[in-house]
Image (cartoon, rainbow, N blue to C red):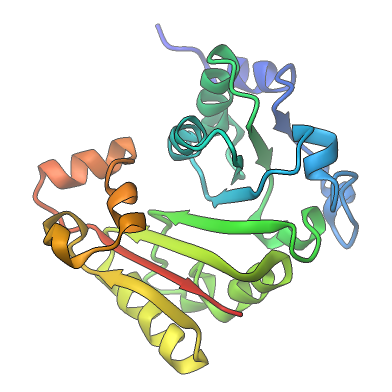
Length: 226
């Protein structure tokens, strides 16, 4: 029998790698770790990578295993989902992983200017009817700008052609720097992709694997805003 949602919430409260601030701690306020994640949480000066809307944290954990010289933080509002990644990373002894249970809207309450090196958006809700809610909409990109290092990278992986094409149009309209884009990631000729994209091919979420088995295309793009 699987563990209940209430049990997951209870265990999250005991996990040292899960931060669950109250609303008042981050609404128009700075979290205690803002500007000090390297010092307070990871105890090193390695680059910090965010996964926004991380769900069960499988991508965050997979990247942390693959890149031990980087620190990874998964952010999601659903504590019952975060539980899985937090538990796996603790049991696996991963010291370069943390999770924050919060809304992405509060991103600038948690991180200072140039504190983040990369941001991953993995299969976010394409928000078909609410353009302003898309995680590559101007409202959110401005938040990313406030925390990323100069020329910091934003990655988008999605099965939504709508979100992919919308993001491409935003990149062009705002004159961001597009580094790579494809609407069929796993069908690309290896001779046509760079080393960084080849590395990305080897890390997949559970649902991404299911999408591929169903023959669905996976879109991927990488860009910077400064």
